[in-house]
Length: 372
Image (cartoon, rainbow, N blue to C red; front, side, top):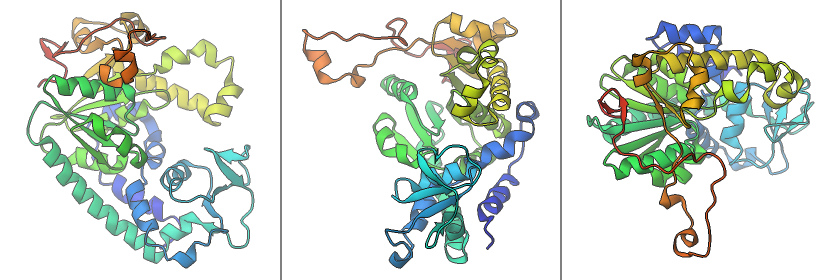
């Protein structure tokens, strides 16, 4: 197998996807492929393959170098960092001496091993393909078992299911719903396990392939946050019409990086988010606008003033699909001493507009946003 093995795996999967929403696809323009490549490496399968390496192929004094700075590099770093202590990124042109906290190496040295070649070699490459196929079969079975045909099951889908969703899942479960998390970061599964009835790891491409072909209703809860608004739009692109997606606006791209500010700090933004940050920012604004106006439902983590600047046109129909939902404290997130020790005070700084208890809230018309 050639060294562009991961490219071949990606395109063989991507070509099986059928576009459902042309409108969502048009928002992404020609960037869909590059956006998806970063999400195309299965951490679990990489870990399984890594465990199959013979000990003599990994002397402790030899560096493992990931070739180039790209979406593929990001994915490989995320998969291998917990497994290998002596990682580097091989790049002669990258400005910084580090990439995602990993040393950048300008030249390959004697004894250095290229990660890309290891996993695209005939032995591990074939093993990766075999394990990925097995993973996708297991994923389909696990999701069917976890969700069944019960309309009160909410599927939370995110690379990292952050505190807002953990909190919301906890309260929904208290109200009688069942929650399932589909997580695209293998390292987060253990941390998040206690907040859902079931938690399933997969890579984003495998998730889209399953979603694209599912023949029954699924109710998804996803999250938009800074420079990640393309994720819900990608889901909308391939989501069947009998499935619905409720999107939570966590960090508003428009609010945190307004046009007037971006024009003043382009160099600073490039240092933080890469050379293509201005183009990426424009794409994220377009994705955010699409979500606000076309999603099945939108939750705003704030009052109505947080929502209003994003709404380019308003109508009763659009209003019925939006919910301003201020942050609320959940006692399970408190340290025990804050509950029993009356001498201590708990102070909320930002994010909590008022205390509020969620029930089956009126979100889409006369029913809850999670009801069918």
